[in-house]
View 1 (tube, one colour):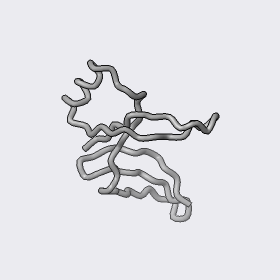
View 2: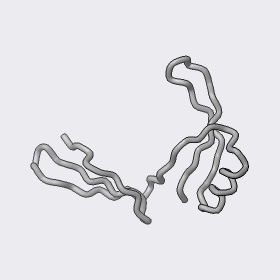
View 3: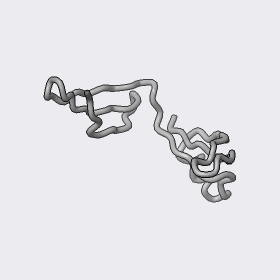
Length: 81
């Protein structure tokens, strides 16, 4: 079994530092396909939207399902390019 110790965004994707229970050693795994992201309420206020565009991130609108109510909700996905 492997346990996540840290995750760090790097230009190549994401760098995962894992602990391998079987070998009792640390392992580094770099995933070039992963792009860090987070969600913000939709719509984003204009000043925040301007700032995000200056940071050169990708913005998209997605529909997520609320965990407690099951209702669909629209959010803005902010993804690092």
